[in-house]
Picture 1 (cartoon, rainbow, N blue to C red):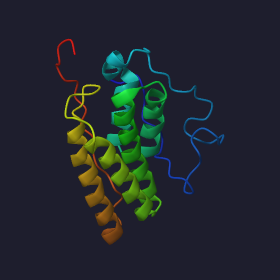
Picture 2: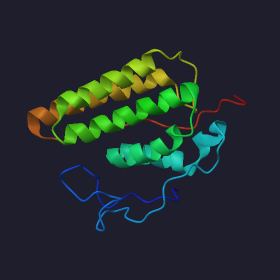
Picture 3: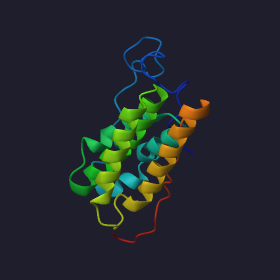
Length: 166
């Protein structure tokens, strides 16, 4: 069970109140997100890290981006690149919901490129190439949104892997 709750709405710029800047925002006066531990090796087990996936998988793309950014600011190397790709996928969902499909596609292209230059070794208990499926799903969801108005939604599967002492 998550120690974090889902927000009252998924923020879409120009459509509803900014979550942290507007007094009616769902996270107004909430403290900044902070990973529980500064060691990147423990992040996959951090409830906040898991909450980012819960937000994303629930369609709270802007909110997931905010959570992952807290980790990105502290990350280095391939971990930083992987988190940057996650943030790009989340940002594409926000842009698609705003109707900015070309921008959303560019964000997905950048995320795919970031993932494509990584080797396929687990990073933060994730296999980077598996994110390419989430990118493809987001592309399909955006096409459906353009055609029939169904808001884009895709999933990033995040199950802690048993990697021993890696």
